[in-house]
Length: 126
Image (tube, rainbow, N blue to C red; front, side, top):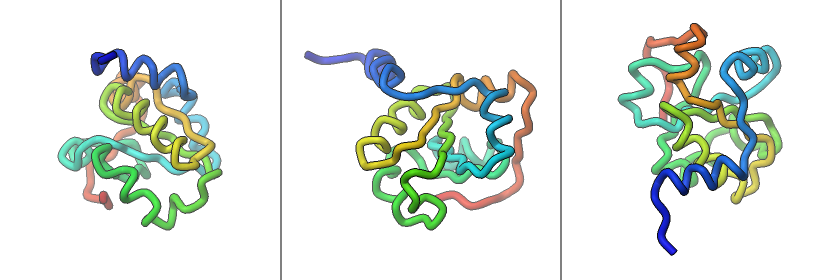
């Protein structure tokens, strides 16, 4: 049975934990990794402060190479533009052993709508 992209995202969302942007911001007062799974050009245009960029297309291949992501039990907030790619990424990361994942509902668009901080200076992406 084939599925539409939106059905895939809905199925993924049913399997993961999501958190609204203000709650995600509050959780950042504790140690947490912030993972942006958008493309590099999207990341450079504006991102959540402290985020690391690993585009969704190479996520499973690259995440284990980064020292900040070797502890598979450490908390990770995942986001994209509107939440779809982040939900799919969270499912895949859980399949390879990551256990403390939350997707930011509505992605960077909802983050900006909530008037939360966004940074645009050059930073690391993979």
